[in-house]
Amino acid sequence: MADFTVGETDFLLDGRPVRLLSGALHYFRVHEGQWGHRLAMLRAMGLNCVETYVPWNLHEPEPGRFRDVEALGRFLDAAREAGLWAIVRPGPYICAEWENGGLPHWLTGPLGTRVRTRDAEYLAHVERWFGVLLPQVVERQIDRGGPVIMVQVENEYGSYGSDQVYLRRLTGLLRECGVTAALFTSDGPEDHMLSGGSVPGVPATANFGSGAREGFDALRRHQPSGPLMCMEFWCGWFDHWGSEHVVRDAADAAATLHEILECGASVNIYMAHGGTNFAGWSGANRSGVLHDGELRPTVTSYDYDAPIDEYGRPTEKFWLFRGILALHRDGAEDAPLPDVPPAPPSLGEPARVEFTGWAPLGDVIEVLGGTETEGAMPATFEELGVDRGLVRYRLDVPGPRQAYPLGVTGLRDRAVVYVDGVRAGVLTGEAGAGSYTALEEPVAGPASVELWVESLGRVNYGPRFGEPKGITGGVLHERQYVHGVRARGLSLGAFDDAGAVAKVAFRTLEEGAGAGAGTEAAPDAGTGGLYRGVFQVRGVGDASVVLPGWERGFVWVNGFCLGRYWAAGPQKSLYVPGPVLREGVNELWVLELEGGGGGRVELSEHPTPPPTPGSKPSSALGDVT
Image (cartoon, rainbow, N blue to C red):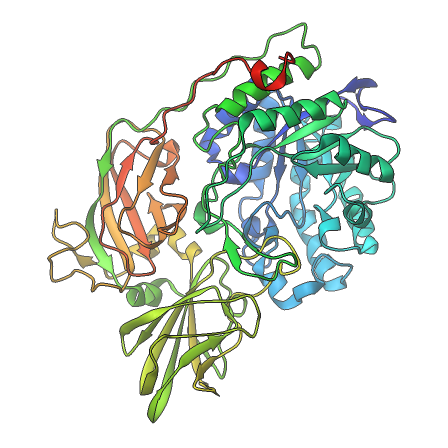
C-alpha cells in the first residue's frame, strides 16, 4: 500500500515527488485478450501510468440491467500486473468520440438538456450507477494496494456548462462512494472552460494538442499552485466518415511532448493506443461554431494516429516519444526502458468468404426486431428503445391522389426509402430539428412507403449532445402530414445472440456463386439484407476485412461485431482482433443496409507493413534525445 497525494508543486508518492507519464488506453476499445500486450507497449514507450474512461451506456444498456461492469476491475488488475498506475475517468459523461458521450440513450431521451445538471431525476440515476460502478475502483485504489491514483470529476464540463451545484454534488458523491484517491478536473485551456469546469479544492488539469506554455499559463491563472498536468495531450486525431484521413506529423507531436515535459509538467498522452469502436459504438459530431451544422459520424477505427497503432504496433511517433520519455521518467539514469514486446501474430494466409445464405432486411427485422408500434407520428429511436441500429418506418399514402413530393422533417440520420417495394432513394437529415428533405421523384397515391432509418452515431460533444435519433418530425406528402406511422426497431445488440440469428430464414446460396450471384435465391439489386458465410483460417492472428463493392453496414466474425463499414471512406478495412478467430472454419455475417451487397469479402493481414525504428529524432528536436 502507498500514499499518493497532490502537493503544492508536485504529485507525491509517500511524500516523494513523482511525475506522471500516462497514456490513454480505453479497455472497451481493445479486445480483452490483448490488454496485456497493449499495456506492455505503454511501459515500453516509457510510461508509468494508464488512463481510461468508463462508458455508462456500454455497461447499462437498459435501466437496471448491467453488463460486465467487472471489466473495469479486470483491466485495472491488468494495469497493476503490467507495473502501471491508473487514472480512472468514470464520467458520467466521457465524450471520447463515443456514442452519446457515454450516457445511455434511455436517459438522454426523456431528460434532454436536463442531463449534466443538478436536475434531481438525472442525479438519482447517476447516484445509482456510481453505486454499482465505483466499487470496482474503490477496492483497487493505491491505498489498498491497487493501481488507482486519480479519479476525474465529470469530463471537460467547462466546454458544456457552468452548473457548479452539479459539479460539487458529483465531487461529494465520489467521496461518499468511497473514493479516497486524488480527484481532479480537466478542461481546455480557456478561461470560460476552466472557470466553468473547475471545482474549488479539486486540482485542475488542462487539455491541448500544442502551445504547452500558453496552456499552462492559462491554467495558472485559475490555479496558482499545485502540479501542472496536461490530462489530454492530443498527439493525433480521429476521422469522420466522408472526410479526409487525419494525420499529425510525428516530429511535430514529439516537439510538443518535449515542451510539456520541459515545463516540469506531468502528461497523459491521448491516445497512446486508440483501438477500435467495435459494435457500432462510435459517436458523432456536428460541424459549425455552435455545433449545429452537418452531422459528422466518427469512423469505426479509433487508431487516432497514436504512437501505438490500431494493430498494437509501434509507429514512428512511438519511437520519438520513447526517446523523449526516457529522459524525463523518475530513475531514468538507473534502469533502461523495458524491451518493446513483439507484435501480435498476423493472419497466416489470406482467406475469402464463401456466402451460404442471405435474408432480406424485412425477414431479419421480423425475427430480431422489437415489437412494432403505431402512432399518429413516427416514434424516435429513444421511444423504441434502440441505441445502435436502425428503425423501419411504414406508412400508407392515401389515394387516389396525384404525384406530390414525399419528404421528411427532422430526419436523423439517413433513410433508405422504398415505395411499393421499389427502392426510391436515400434521404439524409440536415442540422435543424424542423429541416425538410424529400425524394427526387414525386409519389402518387395510394402507395405503401417504407423508410429504413439508421443512426450513424449520437452526438458526443457540444450543445447538440443527447439529441434524439430517427424521424423526429414527420412524413409529408405535399404539405400534408401522413399519419398512422408504424415503427419497428432493430438493435445491433440483437445480433449478440447467435441462436436468435439462426432463426432467421436464410435463403440458400449456391456454393462458389459469390453473394448469391446467378442463383434464384439471390437478392434483388438494391435491397440489402443479412449475408451469412464461412471462411477458413490457417494461422490465427490479427487480420483486416475488406468489402469491395459493398456500400454500408456492419460485419460480425464468429458473433463478434467488428463495427460499421462504409464506402464513403476514408476507412477502407475493418480490424479483426486475433482472439476473435479460430483455426479452421469461421463464420461471418454482413448486414448491408443500402443495397450494395453481393461483392467479395476478404481477410488478410494488415496492408501496411509494421513500422521500424527510424533515424534519431534529433533532426526534429535538436539534441534533446
